[in-house]
Length: 77
Image (cartoon, rainbow, N blue to C red; front, side, top):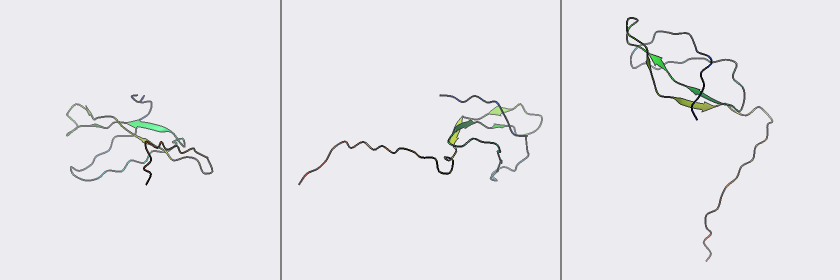
């Protein structure tokens, strides 16, 4: 399911081959978020849009969860 983009960060300048960090505040716990990068080589170039990616924020402290595991077969000796 593709994401819906309702917010964006400010544009910033970075160097080729250097890692970039963007701080995103106000995220909800236990929520799937989608993002894609827009980039251009120079300010005169049109914006290019990268592939969609996603991440999931951690559960709120104390929030319970269920873990299920399916067993496909059992070997008996």
